[in-house]
Picture 1 (cartoon, one colour):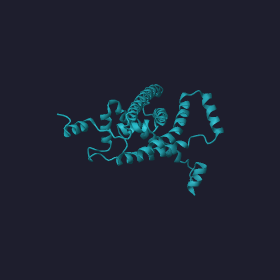
Picture 2 (cartoon, helix red, strand yellow):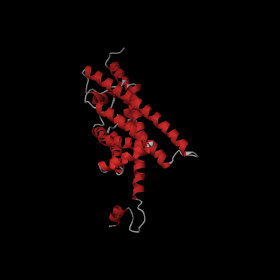
Picture 3 (cartoon, rainbow, N blue to C red):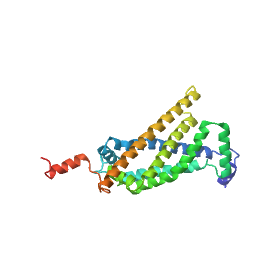
Picture 4 (cartoon, rainbow, N blue to C red):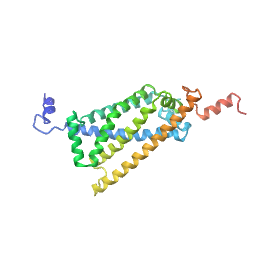
Length: 263
């Protein structure tokens, strides 16, 4: 009963202001921070394809704990994807609390933002739009990884992107993730005053500069990475090798030696 009263009035039965909104804000901030940092790390890992197919293969096997388990175990990637998916859904649920519940509310918020001419308020609208897009695009991607963790590698990933027509989705997801993530981390830093120092106004200006730099950096890196996977996928399709798994250079050389092809 007390929870019902608190939900309607925003106050506890003791007439104290409810602390639930603050707790939910904290959960939203914590999950957003985890996801933002994860996405930056994820981008750096998948971009290993730019250093060569062997490098990307090695990174994949490291994530499968091949240094502990012989040959690695894709199930570990599935478990990691499931954990991220739970955090992702939790963050989305917390974020939905602040979205306008009707078109009328949206009109009021939009008019308020235009009247203020406040850049950070406009950033919130961008974050809300990209967050809505990510809810669908990100869920699809995470489901694919959870159920196909054994199909990650230079060839398998490239075939999925090109031959299975996932590249349009990944273009949209890349744009949504990078804008949402960098804006979100910027707004978190401002909200909690992590870098305020003695001059919060100057600190905010620096944060905006870093936000733009990081957005450009990860967008450029992301599109170069996507282009590399698409190129490999195109080559595989042209050569009739769709579905083949990548064999690292060292294993190919060893095979040739053992089969007597190399003197």
